[in-house]
Image 1 (cartoon, chains in turn yellow, green, cyan, brown):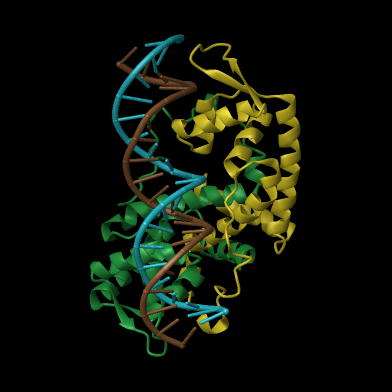
Image 2 (cartoon, chains in turn green, brown, purple, orange; image 1 turned 45 degrees about the vertical axis):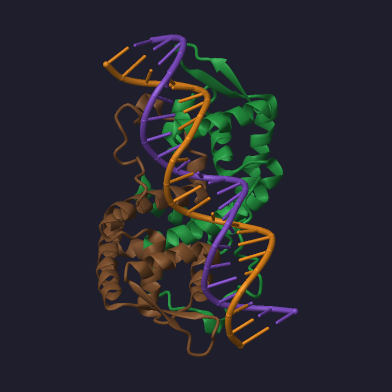
Length: 160
Length: 160
DNA sequence: TATTGTTATACTCTATAACTATA
DNA sequence: TATAGTTATAGAGTATAACAATA
């Protein structure tokens, strides 16, 4: 199930008319405010487009990581995506019961479980990656390729 | 109450060592992924620094909007910040009982309520705005002033 | 009939504590 | 003693439906 935000398709009654518009000049000078607003827009587009695959953002991140890091453990996924272990359990279980991933004993650590995509999972995430590429391109359509690269570089300067 | 994320101060045991690091090259090419990661970092710094004022991000946004838009209504705040009306009710009630805002009858619409900062609220949000400016500067310390402007401009190209 | 503000409520996301089995 | 994975659960945040007062 994907949460359907209202925003682009705000009902006319709730849409801010010109006369309703408040002065947001101060907020719009803040990196945090702008980052959050941009993320909300992208995440809405993401949810809409990825609904057909039954994938939320975190689901996609996990499957994409497993595509490029076969055999990764829950612990590694948690550390990489900043997810808390208890919150990954049901996600992994869901992917497993959908037949998208397989849990195999870890070769060198009896406590850990190596996570691998099934052929079905591999097919799905490969398609999903293409859909995400397209969706990202659409959501950032007003940015040139160079601007898009710049944006990513500047964002990474904040969190990396 | 402010949520305390773990992240900067990840316990050594959970921190990703070099050997644990997964390949995140694909995710790091996505605007959405980078935007979210950057926002999580800023929002963590925000929560830490604004705890002394007892303000969450949404609280600050509302108070700052009221500072620059005295008499704004709940409906206008909702439209501007993309908050749903039911979710603003307890926020407004809290600000009211803390003595930060006053609710006055709207001059031209008997259904609406004009929201105004009290002198105490005005003092608090003025201090808070300075704290936010400092916090933003710290959180984006690795960006030059020009890069910071560029980042904001590019983010607005996505959501505005 | 439509809109503002509200109540009640449900669903998702994120967080902590504590357990088990392995190391 | 510490770590990987898990269970149970609590708390934010975000969503919908429906109501009263007013337009």
